[in-house]
Length: 469
Image (tube, one colour):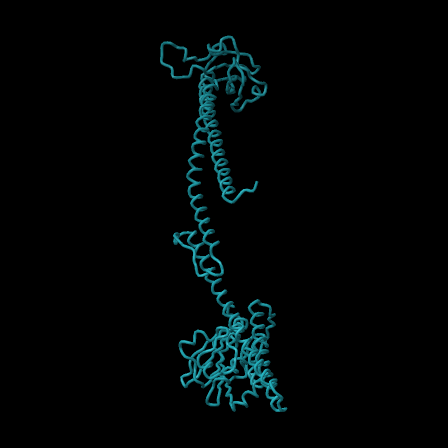
């Protein structure tokens, strides 16, 4: 039979409580039995010492006797009546004994007769149908050893322990029941809260990820658990929203050039045309293919970066050399726009990054500046700051409206100005830059250019203090 979590928790709790209460009761009973026996031993030893002192004070062996005060009717005696006293010599022969022993003698072992330096205790299970505790106290007198034997019945101790056993058993049962009852209440409450969390979580699907778990325990661990789950749901909702937007935008961006290509081809095929017309259609289709290729490559790289599939082979790179290579790759676009790039980059500046990523990051920012600058110039500056490198790419275009600035790094986002002026692009360039920045251990920010346009700033931290991904 399969046991659920509630049953496992309850059984574990009951087992622990029973074990703890049982061990506590057994330990208490053991301590009580030791205390009772020690009390009896102390009383027997005290009486044996008294008899030994009197034995030492006697002058003649014939005067040896038991000072049996408890049988003296002329005085009050608080000594127990069940104490049995006997004096024997070193051979075990009885020299004197208390009257309550009658004709019987207290048993003494040969080992006890060889004990000359300290008292010894023995337990006799059956003596006249009673258990007895006997102390053997050695006395040295006139070059001879004598032994004072004092015995007491253990019936009282046995009765005390039997009574204590019943009391401890009842107390253990009552205590265990009370602890179990008091403990199962919060367990049941916690499990009900967990069950409610489970029920609410089961009702949250892809269609209603905006829902959150109700939290009535804001100040305790359960409340912290619920807050953590709600935060996870928030991240899931954001991820699903990004996925939905990505799918929608990607399908739109892919569909538009394909539709344009289909339209151009259908128009070209409606009637025979000259060579120049066909070449124009093919060139238009080739441009659309180039656009699709760039977009698909960007989407593939973003997916690989998101999945951490790219291997980072970092190396020390000169910022000046990187910029020279980027500008060389962009020379044709710069010539088409008749743009000049002013670079102010000290030769000694260097960063630690993967070269392909660094080139792509800076290249996308330069490409973005080429698209939007209006006064035929772009400025690139680099300085060293707190051990790191700060690179600024400044264009002089229309700039980015303040309400659009928070979204410029979102995937497939294209602002109003871009759409109005039909500036080519897919809306993936800055999104790719943002993702590459995380993998290149740098930060990228945007700020408006006071002269009109935008300033994109890339900050590389020093190698010994890398920026977190």
